[in-house]
Image 1 (spheres, rainbow, N blue to C red):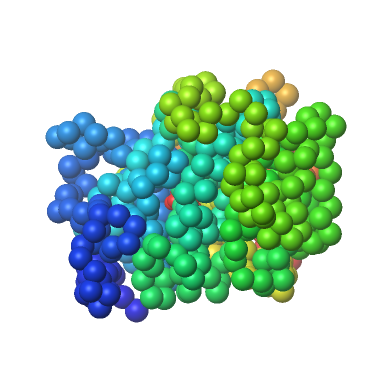
Image 2 (cartoon, rainbow, N blue to C red):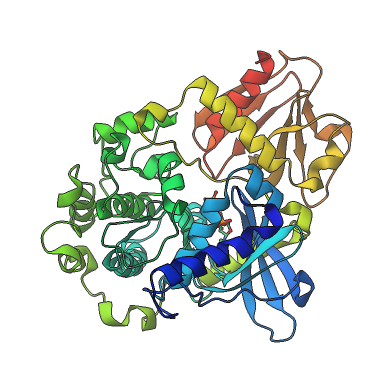
Amino acid sequence: MVGEAEMEKEFEAKARIQQQQQKQPPQRNNSGIAFRAPQEQFTKDDFEMGKVYGVGSYSKVVRAKKKDTGNVYAMKIMDKKFITKENKTSYVKLERIVLDQLDHPGIIRIYFTFQDTYSLYMALESCEGGELFDLITRKGRLSEDEACFYAAEVIDALEYMHSLGLIHRDIKPENLLLTADGHIKIADFGSVKPTKECQITVLPNTSNERACSFVGTAAYVPPEVLNSSPATFGNDLWALGCTIYQMLSGSSPFKDASEWLIFQRIIARDLKLPEYFSDAARDLIDKLLDMDPSKRLGAGPGGYAALKKHPFFKGIDWKNLRQSPAPRNARELNAADDDDAQDSPWNLSHIGGGSVHQQVIPNGINGATSSSESQSRISKLAKIDSFDSRWNEFLESGESIVMISKLKRLQKLTNKKVQLILTDKPKLICVDPTKMMTKGSSVIWSSNLSDLSIQVTDSSHFKITTSKKVMSFEDAKERAWQWDKAIESLQHGQ
Ligand SMILES: Nc1ncnc2c1ncn2[C@@H]1O[C@H](COP(=O)(O)OP(=O)(O)OP(=O)(O)O)[C@@H](O)[C@H]1O
């Protein structure tokens, strides 16, 4: 195990050793290991930290402007102790080393790294337009022209990755980010898997450790992965099919109340295409969601040329994609996101806090939801979420957070963003993040365990009823069933 303060140093040292063993001269590109993005001696005071772009399971990504140059980065900040404790070291190394070697306009760039006593910092290319997931949520669904453009840019980047022998394994709208001018970049390279012919250097243990435990996100997982088949390029093409479906309809194709039920639908290929999908869209999705990974369009005979020639992409100028005008959505999304920026003043204690994305799933169908696994996942979420010290003022001494999310509270006249906090007391608190209300009125439920019931409408919506009020919530990250489980397990004293 790597000592926390030494992690980055050892990482670089190992990389150098491997390079010497391979007797390769340092190269900037795909075959070498000498880092293109250097490890700098910067400190966090060299940057003006702005709004929080998002929170991952072990990191927080913040908009950071370098004071002397004015350059803007997405600074991924990781707490060393947390990474070591949660066994995320290999994930961090894998993402760092892989990103460093990739060079494509459709893939997030890494510029440099640095560290201090507590944290590792990765300066990434900033995607001011946010996640494709949020764009879909905000618009309900995208037009076929928009979906066609975004899908083409993803395909262009996937073709590059696959040509180097790298499988992403976690393609989904949350990992597709929009630049300020509306182009797509693939992010999150912690799940990548090299094929035997891979031209990208991956340190020993890094991909393997991750490969054994995580293989993607439930809704986008291809059927063969549920049968523990080895990863292939077809994995990403299936996930691309799901993503195109989601852009056009607003939700993923295989949806159900629990991960286990989602897996059943995937295995049965229980696919319903809405009537408003064009014939070209239906045909494309049908061919990407082929049960046989080697026959999926893009992986089958004809490879990417066949995929790019599909009628859905008629009119796409593949050679000049990045010069083509992108849909205007990103700018609109930026403006709307400015509200969020205000309730996220940046400080280091935020690392690991805030909302958590859809769950990555354990390998194989046997890893599907059992109640004990749900429990351990919920307590894991608690650990992550409790990291955010902003919410501590709502807790009594010894009380800890079981679950926390930024949700939309749906009311008759207006919808409002709120932070819903469930503690082990148990207590359920609804906080207005702009006012940080501490008054008793924010406590929905505490003393009487049976004075609360929760009804889940679908994976994004649930209702909480107490003797005093009924409150409806929308969870854009589709964690309604996790809220249900967390509350019920507290009521039953589990
Ligand atoms: N380069 C970037 N520009 C803008 N926002 C980003 C960038 N990279 C990540 N983000 C935002 O920050 C969030 C957290 O990113 P991070 O890479 O830490 O975790 P993740 O990939 O979402 O989750 P996990 O680590 O759990 O797989 C992302 O979901 C995204 O919204």
